[in-house]
Image (tube, rainbow over all chains, first blue to last red; front, side, top):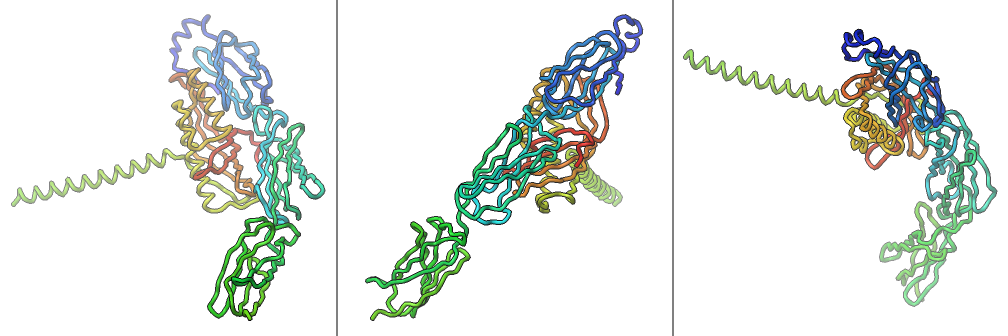
Length: 288
Length: 183
């Protein structure tokens, strides 16, 4: 593209020996980020050379008719570049693309940080592939996700990254504990840890015994359907219905068991629940 | 009597002129505001693996337009602070460095934005990242001082990576790519 600048044409006509002839730039269509290269030019005389990239502007004097050397440091960011050479009276320009080099590093996101066991498609892993200049690698490359549960056999999922992004979805495994997921490409590896926790309680059961003040109600050890202990602190609700009405007491699980003492003297029905899970119901008789 | 009618006519004419002036000013202000924000249309028909929610689509459209408005002004006037609102990560780093170089060399890039046809094609399952391809009609002028040394008016293609923040979507990567990079 040529643009005539606001320069007195008459002056150029009067000084033909000083004015340089028009440049004609021929950059390569594509350059790998960080690679030095040269741009052949036509014409003769001095010119001002500009290189305009996504993160860098260069301006310097060059001699037309010679190849214009461009240092690798000036083309580290991928994207479209514009090379412009201006003589006194006109400018010529040409564009080229700088593409990312080989994969060198990963940015890896693993969600969520805590997940219940045996949850279908609950774990999301997304990896972004960059070269050593932090350019997104757009050509198709393969990313491996190595999954290592605390209990169970490790396995690997291989995913093709498209336009710099590789992602996968997987279910959590049946056993609680940390799961290490490492995204790798070449020598680059990014590990992340996800904590698998017990799911909702399963087969929630209570038993009761008389005490001096009322009725002591406690659960069996609370576990999920895979046999993992439901974490301490999880709330269990005990509900008693007797002749005076309904009483509900919330108690946290401590050392795997939730317990509470209900001030009951007559007959009562006691039930238990935790979250959306309902347990068994028992009947206690009156004090004799 | 004649003088009374004349006064009534003058008051009426003045009021009419006032109303017309206020209406015209409002229209001009609306026009200026509309012009300052680039036209952005987003198509998310083929997005995967997660569909885009309607509200999210509206927010991304709004924030992408705001980002381009800020970018144009930041580059034209060498104001890197304008990048803070809608840019983050590598995109912000790159444009900040570009503005720093512009200040050193006296070169400036000026965009005249003629609109963006954006196709959203990747939305992460957790909603944490979105990738888009923008066919933008941009008139670009490169200035050395006040002199335009290059200008072009083309449709160019940007590969965009956006991530959500507390109340808006940020551009994390904005790269001009050749047509072959289209998904």
